Length: 267
Image (tube, rainbow, N blue to C red; front, side):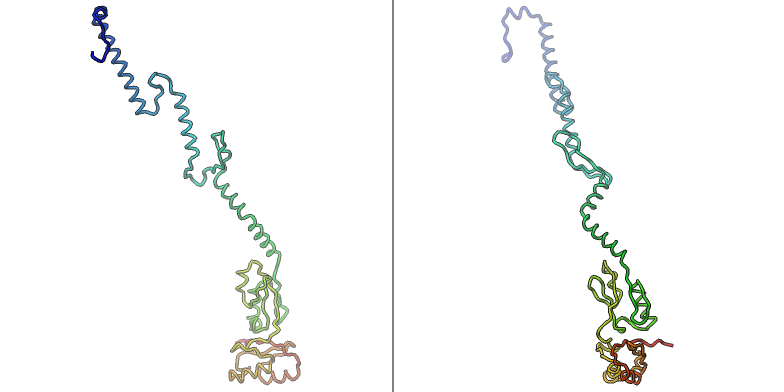
């Protein structure tokens, strides 16, 4: 041909027709094999030989290992029981350490709230050892429960802490006359404090300073009497004033001005 090799007459005479055709077929066969291998290597990533017939098993093995390492290092969404990898070494493919996720979360929570949990536990233990000892201001009754102490005042003496001239003081410093604070405070240890001030009027916010002053206050400001108000006055000495007259007479005999107000029980 024009682009192929040129042969002179002597060479052509030496080559027979069969030999020439055979060499041409072998050459085409070789070209077909090379093109087939090229196509196969392009379409498939799992080829084990190159164009020259050399083995690619070592290269394939290395790439497969690299893919496995990448898959391991990629974070994946797993179940709650999957392992949590703490880190990878530079030389090794395996993680340095792995712990079950549930255990790791528990350790994190315990470590994060270690200080607070210790303080709360110590407070709870401290609270458990402490007990209230609430003494009734009217009798010798004692109780360790705020609710029981308030119920005793209401049922046995028909009074309240404010009317009895006392209040509850918690160790946190809060003062109250009800049971609400014990549910909000972690300490919740109370003592009974007697008021130095006179009890309030049952009909307003004023505080008369004596039994006779209380009777006069009811008459002047509320147009009523002790016997009509549904309450009675009890002196610190134990005397009970059910009427205005009793209150005035007792005030002349008793120098003490401390008294409490109680509600009359319905018959």
